[in-house]
Amino acid sequence: SGNVREGVALLRENERISIDADKVTSIATLLSDWDNSAVDVDKRLIIAIKNKDVDVINEGARLLLKAKGQVESKEYVLTRTEQGMEKHISFSTGDRIVFNASSKELNISNGDFGKLTCINENQFRVKLDSGGDDIVFNPNEFAGFKHGYASTIYKAQGATIRDVYVLHDGFAGLKNSYVAMSRHVEDLHLY
Image (cartoon, rainbow, N blue to C red):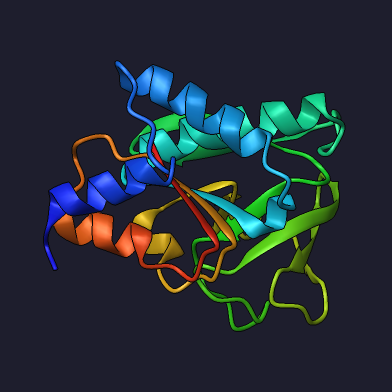
């Protein structure tokens, strides 16, 4: 209904909102709460507005899962050029990914989530959340994927996730906030 005060009061009343002094502290609190969730990793998603925040959160989530042994320590490093800058991105068996490009050949759509079940220099094998046969591709030939612990609001739009953590950094407006909160979720947490 557009009544922001009432919405925030309801979130506070149900202990679903955390307000910290700065973004760094909010991200740390969010990652700690996400890491301590009893919900399986494939049923949790962190949502942010900015891609740079998504990248930072994805790296933090990977570190937490590696420390628990849920993501293998052996990594395969991909080098990509983004906005004219070379970027090194590490992937391991056990990582969650999201496809950010569609491929008829691979039978995947932009926004599909999955888990890397086996990787090597020339082949990544992914078990999609939606089921079906594993997807196998050469990461040097198909670069339409990234880590999938955190996602932008619009990439996650339409996803049904049980446990959602939203980084709301002041850049979000009413429309973005509504999209972030209008998921099929059991637990919603705002930071």
